Image (cartoon, rainbow, N blue to C red; front, side, top):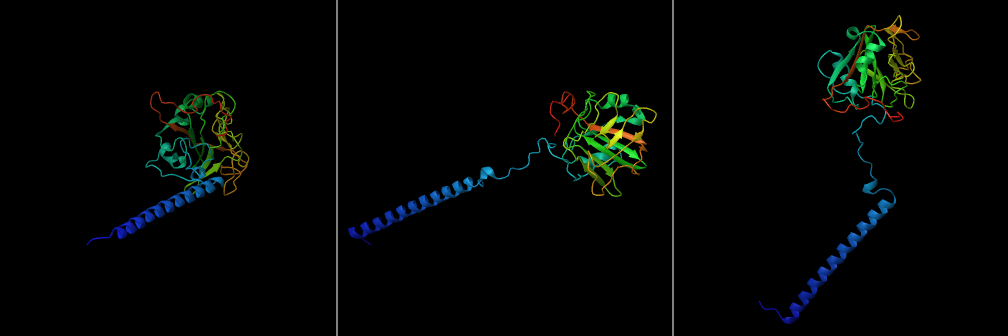
Length: 259
């Protein structure tokens, strides 16, 4: 079938018009897209300003989570505290008992000889058949003063499970006294096991000032409010580090202690 020159010319003109129309539509769409992005950016809603996933590379820049993690099979101190360590430096690290008061001695000197420079640690103490304790992200070093951390927490055993108690004040004094002749101090009085004098097993606990009172509005973690108690078992659990591996907070800390 033959086409006349006129029909061919008309066909060419129609095709050219269609191409031009497509390019124009594409250009308008791109321009509108750019305008939309510009407007979103102006109002603070561009992709650059969207919330970023929470950085967990150093998980203890915030207060402790109340959540628990899956435990491990076993009945040793390491297995007992494992569920409490969600979102801490020790969350996935192998654990070890560095201080056992029955084995190493109920004294501040024995305590520090075993726990200093071990980094983040958990204190686990049994009182009247129930476990209580605390997590110290800063550890001990016998350098004097206090070692504060907003990520520190206390805990006590319930009929089923555990209850964590967050810090109630900025800094909180995770380690209230980092002195070679002083025992365990969370805050000034939130959980104290002095490990000195005639009653080295004495345990004191006053909640509400340095650490919160929790959902049960407790004034103490001990069986009776206003009374000290006696520990029957006491352990400190720390992480296992490879030879030459840096242990965070194993020495002095230059920060102000607000995390």
